[in-house]
Length: 215
Image 1 (cartoon, one colour):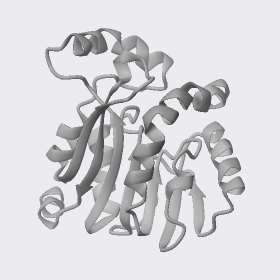
Image 2: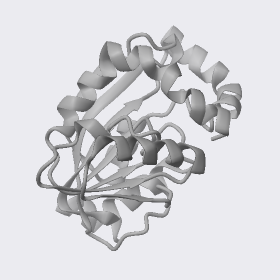
Image 3: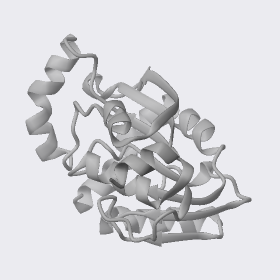
């Protein structure tokens, strides 16, 4: 992401953060414990919502401009037992079965290879570990909003850092072998109509799913 993109990101999301995202983050992240990796941590919108006890947190952000703002927010938070790394979601620099939780918040839309990222997340999650997800996704197939997403997507990707309007992230999770433990579908309030459909919840790295992925 460009310097300007990183500079305006928080301001562009402020309305939705106040309307719904902060509440969603608080509920989702209040449940994590143990070794936790957040991929694409961006400017650090999630930092304040992680429990302060019982969590060893790794924040991964490959973009240097976003990472600078992430470091600033982390310094202001006063949190300890947190490290920032530069790796990408496509190639996580961690041994197999390293984490109890992986967190992805508004990240899956913009990765180059979604299926590859999910396989990599499964690799670093412990068996039974959980992926916490909060993502904007494709609208219902055949809907007017979906048709607009499909039309606008090529241009949107160019101006929005490879963000896809029509990613079917839930289907990709299932296809990769995750078991959906909980999921909520809701409109992201105060967002542009084409990015309002969201999913959030938890997916389990089941033993069966891990075994299938290794074949």
